[in-house]
Image 1: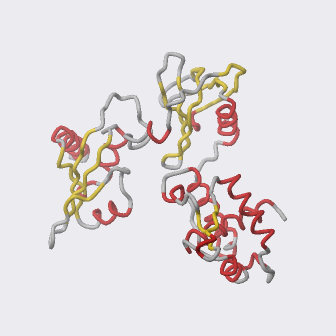
Image 2: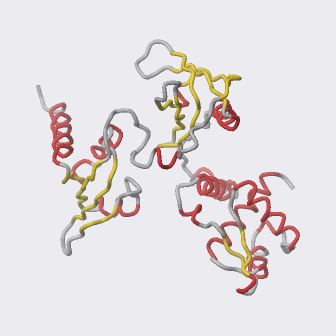
Length: 304
């Protein structure tokens, strides 16, 4: 059996159990034999157990059996499938890949957005992270005429808006973000570094909107008013994990949301992209800044 076929079966099994919440092996088998993957053959207990072990090793997802509940299976750590975790991303990516691979007859009706793989550089960075080895990168920032060389400790990688980024730490303790698509070279050195035992990538970016980290801004409570359809978009696609709805007036065409985040340039850009459908209510300094940016933008279109 090929590796793509095995991964296809792994993702199907996880999704089936997760959606069912609790399910017996007989019920899993019933669903299994209705798929093309089964080729009319049942899922044996031996194969099921082998898949279960592989899923734990590869994805870190535990499939547990509750003997007190009629030997029903469930995801033992299903919180990883609800959070913004690596497991969730991997499973979602493989699930979509499976769907598309089974739909080649209508591929001309499926439009995808390009996500750079960053290939060799991304692979080398991950290899260095595994062994806690420092890396040397040649990096050319936007508007720079020449690339510069940096030696740093690779702390984590982050995917944001279809681009891969590396969070690096310098010997003086400072952090910086580097986009993989701006790297002209990446070399893994033989020098090792000691990872800060208290470092947690999710916590590090917890107060950030995206990947801007070094502009000196501090997290603040921000209140936004969304008009028309925008309020529905914000409900389904929050700007930040801290976002919550605080007011939705009956009979009025708006809803208010609050969130606590660093008002970095990428966050402000996101607010500006919503145009007249989104208004900053608090803090006043941010409202004034966004207003000024809108006015400056409007002046660009005025006739001279």
